[in-house]
Length: 188
Image (cartoon, rainbow, N blue to C red):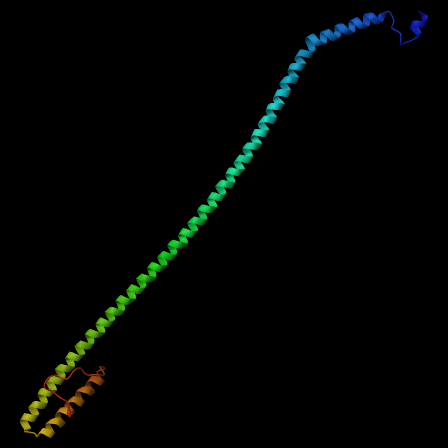
């Protein structure tokens, strides 16, 4: 046995015992140690898989929320653009309405001013007619008092008309109204 003990590759008498103890330790590890370690590893693996799954879901949800945010943002932009366009349209309508109201007010004021001018012109013409009538009566009275000839009568009438025209010019009327019935200008 000297040969066997000197060679380390040849199994010795303790080899079988050592092998048996190794197999018993291996069996004990397999029976009592490995199952809890395997359960712990499986639980850890399930936790990791669940975490990865949740991370994927969170990423997917984040993308969905980002898309939803973009849609809402675009919708808000569209609505603001529509509101801006509507405000511009309403502003244009209001401006047009105010312009029309201004034009109507202008026309109304011009019409009223024209009516006032026309009424003032009629009053001036009536006053002038009254003055002319008074002058004609005055001239007629003079003619009747003096017994004037036809040429003198014409001269008196012409002088009366000239006085009336002068008074009208001084008063700012600039023109006289129609000549009353019965009074004629000389030469007509």
